[in-house]
Length: 444
Ligand code: G6P
Ligand code: MN
Image 1 (tube, helix red, strand yellow):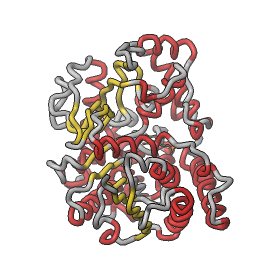
Image 2 (cartoon, rainbow, N blue to C red):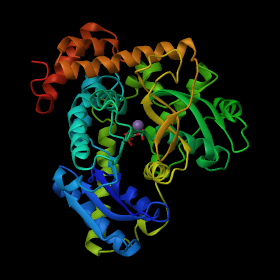
Image 3 (cartoon, protein in one colour):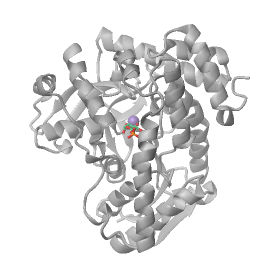
Image 4 (spheres, helix red, strand yellow):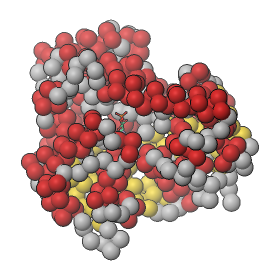
């Protein structure tokens, strides 16, 4: 059986340890010969590197090569898969992405609205640079990209690497929802097959089929309207995610018939989302004080003790996020032909939506890549929402490539979480100042 070389771009991410645990437990379908961690933050990544060596020594000794590097030339030579999880600007810039819009009375979120706009303009060049390096050094590698804001990143990479069928953009939110849905039925998400359409962080489930082919969505919607739904992932049992899931109940009551992505809350109830936000303590602060702190403490402990014994990595517990990415890698490596929700070019799958748009839809996945399923015609409400959002995404990417302040202003004005041109201009000027180290002279 072929043994694989996997590179993780963004090796110092808080998501990497759980991902490595999944990789370690996937040796039957995706045997590893070489692991490369790549990051621009050497110290942060060194902790993960130490962890990787300990985990693999104890649980996966067959892996010969465990490399950590800040050099793309080393990272992306001789790789079969690149798992890409860049966070341009880190949590420090995420904090500003959330707080600056809130200062203007607008939704402050890392991927939606003005925050996602700012993050997008930082991500585009970083993602392009990594993809270019990978393509130069390992032309046939599968690149599984889930760097955010995925919609904008996909639109930009789609323009720079138009025919690249081995560059695949994904998001774990629908799968997180599906896992929570499965819990309602005391089942597992892999017992269900979703039908879904939209843009990234902007879509709807239209059907959820069980193994017998029955659509469980109508019953599920009634259940959610009545009882609500909570996240199944234990890592999400915290206030903000519980509130986000509780808004699903609101949404299926207001707009019956489909199950929306949780992120629709920001576009459908923007004022409400602003009102319950604390402009001085946002999600970035929660993550830095919670997940990130725990991540550092746990990794330091494991590095000090030189064993994962006594940590969560000693058990067989996995995170949804890492599992999903490795399931996708498995489908590509072993031609499983399973259905995944992928961000891909529409090409007529949604009949009444632009062919060139990067949409999130079900695709069959195998050795030859992703093949979208037909979605057909979508209703006017969803189509209208998506057209506005897609125009915003396109203008954001235009603004980047044309270095156009005018396009940037159009993009922000068009975003449903902004809409007022005066506010958009003041906001844009604040974002330009705050992102100077990243955007530089982009709009000057
Ligand atoms: C979901 C989304 C990701 C996003 C993450 C944020 O998983 O699909 O795109 O990065 O949520 O979660 P956090 O816990 O960092 O707020
Ligand atoms: Mn996502």
